[in-house]
Image 1 (spheres, rainbow, N blue to C red):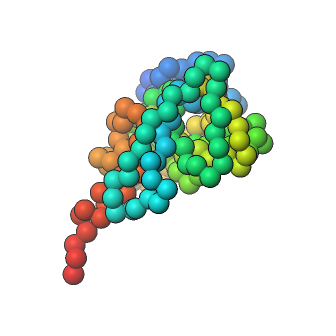
Image 2: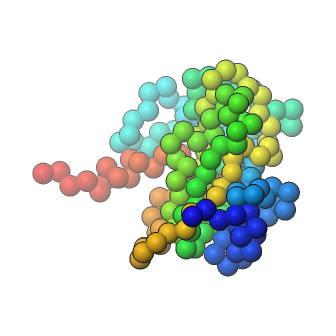
Length: 177
């Protein structure tokens, strides 16, 4: 079951936190999240899963920034969210997708108990000018059945900014046999 927009609003401050919350961003069964003005891009062309990959920051100026195909841009939402008892999901807005801008390539699935800003993996099929503050994606909430454990990973929980991949930490705990 997916919560309706009215139910999302009813559960604000209890099971759902969206800060800041702007009423006009509420949809019939989701809430639009906005693009922050900072982006990260990896500095190396070849990325290594076992290493921390360096990234540099780009700031989107008021007149926008042209994104180029073939580059992965990491961004974050303006909104901080926290969820208890529901599975938060992120999807790109259809208006954004119709411009050939993908706002999350594979990471639209959240965990119960996640708290923080959503990092978006942005990729475009042709050059496109983007602007800070535009509503690029939408969050919606699934109910869950059965017992569950609340998300507590140290990798991305309670983040304060854009989160590049921390996959390399998984390799640090590997046991070589």
